[in-house]
Length: 204
Ligand SMILES: [Zn+2]
Image (cartoon, rainbow, N blue to C red; front, side):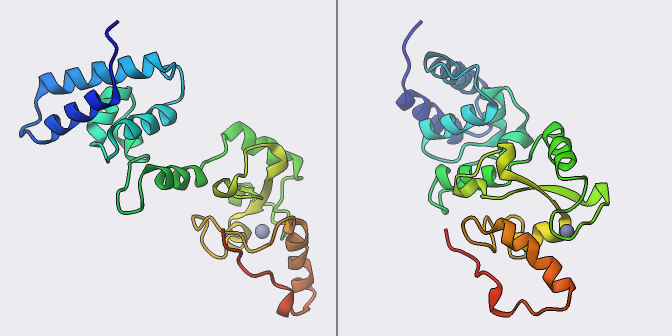
């Protein structure tokens, strides 16, 4: 196998992008070189996400989703989810942003909801279709998909946990404050004012 480098991939991509219509032979060569480099790094057996991430690192720029899809073997719409964004400071940020919205698998969802008694831990809602799995520590802050970091909340409480927007990557309770936070709701229901008890949205 001929050894290939990221420089080669970058050059091919520049050539590909500067030609209209997109040149098929360059596309084919690009895909072969990408596959070869991923293979040599032992990444071909990794997830599409890992491969897409690496491909963007090779090119140091946003790559057309159609081409990413060809090179990696995924669908263009999937490739679009992981695109590199120059304005936001590169791939790393965009990458963590997509991780942050990472969905828990359906199997894990069922398991966590069953563990939590089939209801929202904060308000007790038992409407199955409204229940969601919340990352106690957001993925963007190093949280994992381990059971210990997952908790059942209804859609409403889930939004509240994130200060109104589930995609904000922020949480309204401080470190280790989740169990206190889910109790606040019951105080609220008893008519007590939350007042200053409410934790400020923490920066991260
Ligand atoms: Zn709730």
